[in-house]
Image (cartoon, rainbow, N blue to C red; front, side, top):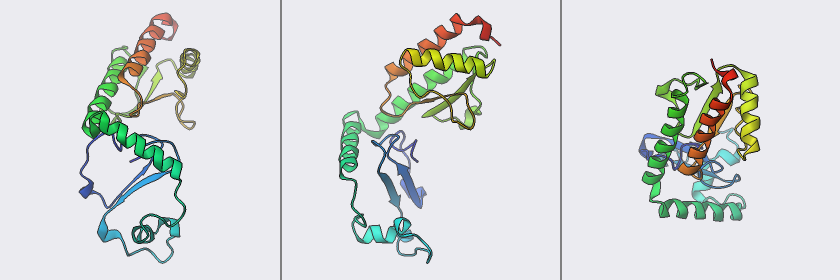
Amino acid sequence: MSSNIMTRKFNVSKFGIVFACAQKNLGPAGITVIIIRDDLIGHPSPICPMVFNYTLFAHDDSLVNTPPTFIVYMLSLVLKWIKEQGGVGSMEEQSKTKSQLLYKTIEDSKGFYSCPIDSAYRSRVTVPFRLSTGPEADKQFLKESQDIGFLQLKGHRLVGGIRAAMYNAMTLDEVKVLTDFMIKFQERHPQFQP
């Protein structure tokens, strides 16, 4: 749940284990949040490495090894910030609003931009998209977006394209800057029209 944790309410009782790396919505990389159902504690496989033997963590108050104290502190600050923003419910509403704005911009582009994910399965946090005319248009988009300060929009190295990550730290105003750029980029580059 690295991308989704703290962006939506969920019923934790439906899961045996929730595993979330912090570097998405909980703070800097270096810590993992694990929520595990009590009945799964105490029955590790005989070949289970110590680092995945949650029985040891449960019995030793998560102190099997030296915890990364700075990252734990940063996690506590992020959780405090989320609470001050109105909690997970508020983060969920912001996540919905941000993703709806970006998906609407893609859909309103009349095919200039496209999202390869079926609308029933789209993420509210990570939105991949492409320009209709292919990799050269994507490359120009990435160059111009980087020139104005958008970093890390390049899609996954195996699939290419463009990928906007809208974790909790990204504000609605920042998403509006991105969508305004997308609209203006489309106006400036009629050669990339489908």
